[in-house]
Length: 316
Ligand code: SER
Image (cartoon, rainbow, N blue to C red; front, side, top):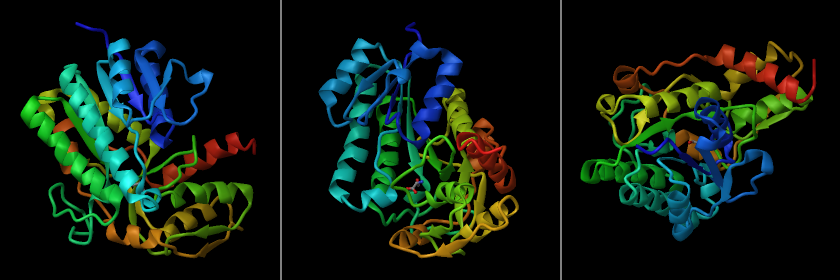
């Protein structure tokens, strides 16, 4: 049996950096190869520069490094994707198909595909959204992820590829400032509060969205990937939930730490995207199949975000 060798694509993104660190803590530095199209720094070694559309290079990397598992994170997010729909489709969908095809060719042990609440649309029940619902996504990102889920399911059923997937809610993290997402406001708001600036929110105050703290997202991902294959009944994206809140609610939680913090609401095109998604998620399939349970709610997430960002900004 080959020893475990993981490839992460899109490793410079909001999830990738934290996931790489966690997988390296677990399996050793050399067991995790990171790759990205953006500049990778020496301290991230071992790494490879990779444009996900360069299938020839992707194949070489998998062969040369004797990769056994891939966490395929490279993608363009919901808001960013609307600036260039065809490019987004190409990267998000054709990138995934190359990964699935190579997983079949190289008989990889496992593949992880991140899906999202952006697969939901106006035809989806908005509250406590069940696992299996009508999907009519409005963004090209949502379309590419919905289609991606179907391809994952197909490669599993047709070729036995052990592909696993989660529909992440908005991810809140202090390690990087995300860009191109509709849920990014819930990270930006902390930076504004800590810097003593007013925050101009691009969503309306009552826009409720499902969210999750980064530690829960990373732990959930690794738990899913380590679960016994027999326990995995969903080969498209598992619904995954932790908390749901509105901009007004997170603002009020932050006020407990920064009583003078001010917010203004100036919704832009991202409001329409957010309004097409659901408010809360029924993730009982993930809970029943492989034991998912979140650790962080709004209050504990706000507390740890402020603690960590104060350290980053060197504020006592
Ligand atoms: N956080 C993502 C976005 O806002 C949703 O998957 O695009």
